[in-house]
View (tube, rainbow, N blue to C red):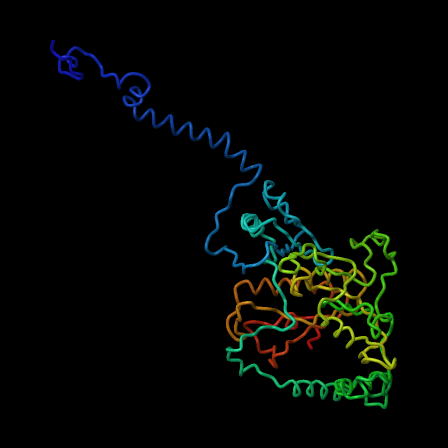
Length: 434
């Protein structure tokens, strides 16, 4: 019996169709253009019905362009942002991301501090925050330093300054200013306190700045409050404890925010980052930090600064402060791990000082560059936002006539010549630079 072959000529001539051309796929092959049109129509329906509502509810990702990218240095998933209008940064972020961010908005400066659950969420949110037209600055949180790490290899010969010459120049300006202090010229007097580190010459700077002459007129008033933003202060130090500012509107130890300022039991000030929240028993160190009401020190630097300002005079021990009758508001801004000073904690402390009645704010630290930028080289692209952060934080203090005293570094560099890479905070306006 002969075999019957498929697709034989006799089948084609008789009008029989192959099995593969029957049904749906056969119709598609026969009507290719119509099929393509139907597929395109279906895709459009999907976009309209599904994608558009989803974007409306949770937000669609925005495309970055090369001219709008944010140059962030590495660091914690925390952003500092400020808008010129009454803008809540959280509301600019898609709802699906908001549950992964907390926002603290400061009263006096309107700086907003955004803490993200991780770096991925931060990266998703930043383009939405950047797109707002009223943006003043947007930067990742950054560290300050008590010992600024200007690179040793930098050619800084053009900006070096002799500290003695600078100090003498300031004294000469004061002596020749003709300023009248109650009808008398400022002059050296015979005031000699009995504090041992003064009498043995260790406090040579007291005579150098003619503090003894100023003491003929005042040793400071108890009504004057100096906020020390630093590493905390030894609250039991015998040369300091009687000159601590006390928040009289707060009842100590009752666990209640009596004065409604957002801080519970803030008797002597506040510790913004020195509380050890978690501890690694293997490495024997803290791994995360948080706030607490008692600003005790981890490092003696803050106690040293507080003593220079207001150590008790003529008590026969320690040193004498330059203004030994003023009160010290203690605001610890260094963390519990390495005493790092984050800008976010500094701007919080400035906000606290402005709200709680400080007259002077001391900031004995400066900017820190982890990559050893040359002070005479070009500034990193994010440096402008760092400057804007401090300008914005300090402006409310200046508006209240609060004097901000900032360090000018320890490198014998004339900071007025650092045009490309200003040494802030002391290079900003409304500051006394020391």
